[in-house]
Length: 179
Image (cartoon, rainbow, N blue to C red; front, side, top):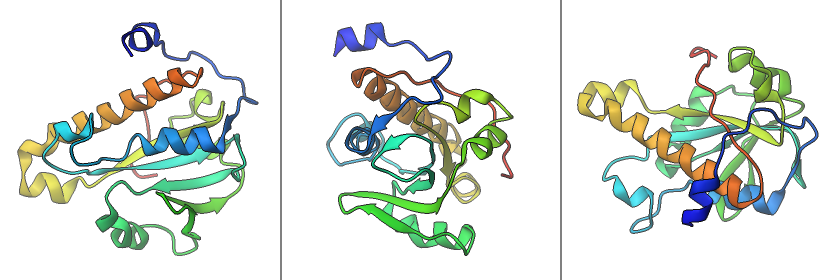
């Protein structure tokens, strides 16, 4: 594990034809799910607050499109109500709370949402995080920084899982909120 951490590097560019298998992709996402007494998410005694909106470009065995990983099952109905009524909400796997919202090429959309950064539309997939924000911070202002810690920890898990799979990942620090 130490060697993996020490050799991890952010990707600087991606092959637009780069792929990941469905099994590896689902395994990677599974590692971001919080479980009691399982590191690293057992370090928090709150949340989870962050869900993953995933733009799938090239995952072998999975349709290209927009997906949502629901990291807190109790948020599913609220997420459905907050999203477009036309979304399919098709479960992808019985073991992982991943839902296909809409099939199609989402490369341009992922770039657009990420401040027009081309890297978001390249490679196997990209993602953004959706968080319970206003309701959490209004009730408990101290949890504001906790949302960032959770998002950062999810990012680190994704980085390390990508590295373990022989892939690369990078963070994109710009996005349009309203989209």
